[in-house]
Length: 313
Image 1 (cartoon, rainbow, N blue to C red):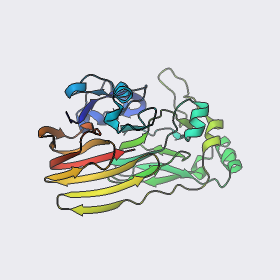
Image 2: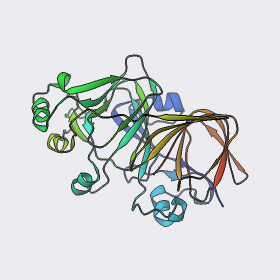
Image 3: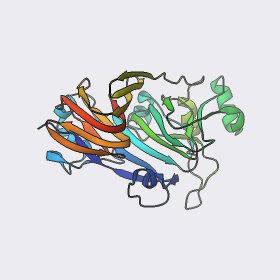
Image 4: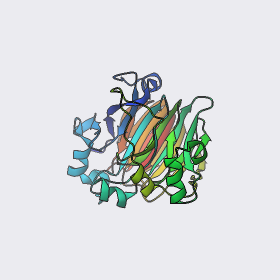
């Protein structure tokens, strides 16, 4: 039986988190400092479970291992992608992620190329996106001197903006920003600077300066250039496509029918409400839903007023 896989997932409390995951998406949250919802994840630090159908209750990592035909019999040894929603009530640390070769050698997992769709941003909100050092030597010198104002590149953001953040990019999400992040399935982060914050035990959080300098790239990052196509009740925008994932924004304003073009797709409902029709079965959709369209779903339809972020390997 062809059916979507709706998921329930884990919240992660963070020193910089807040309450937006409840206030915007009506998710139940365990505290006032929830920073991340790992909405579609098979990573061991936060595995999603299937909510519906014949695989109800099964963890996504187990399903990927045991029912690989649902994922096009692809060869990636682990489920390769992870979808998060982040509530940055305060600045995240200034950080960088390694590529696959460095991460596998030093951390035993995938590297982390990611991208951000800005769901909401308060007036004046900013991110850090790149740095101004022209060599590794200058980079180390400015980091050791804590010359952050001259080193870090700040960029203003607003709702609807998109940023491609490949491994090696210096970055941080600023206060007052709500983000949907599509990334490789990795939890490896090297902190460069953390604003001298202390955790709830009163300790400074660990920095990873040597590893950060190893993996940071020189030169400003080049953002992707989204391309949109309007067809009847669908506006489809390709936000980014690379060796790890393709990410789209679909804006739906009535009935739209799709035919499968990827082995499987990850879908997040960011706004609106409507319905999904698969194999003559109707599934209601609302803001905050997340699901996978597995390989045996050959075609499907949406109807309603919906804003979706869709990705696939």
